[in-house]
Image (cartoon, rainbow, N blue to C red; front, side):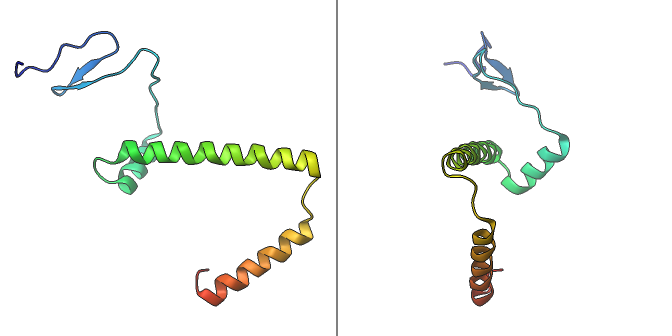
Length: 101
């Protein structure tokens, strides 16, 4: 093994002496500079990929939950808003009593 970084081939690239293995089907994502700064600040050095992966997984889970709730609305009808208000007030009481809110 030599001290040189491997030669980039196909979807691979070499930058700063390290090899990033990429396939041709992998997309390149671009974020607004202010989002990049916020992610770097929140995730910490060396943890940006994990942070972004968790964010994407969370958003996918939210989308699945929205589709599930839409199916329930279609099958059972919309939720009675008076029940929503009732349970919201109960949760607010619990939050106030426990100091969470």
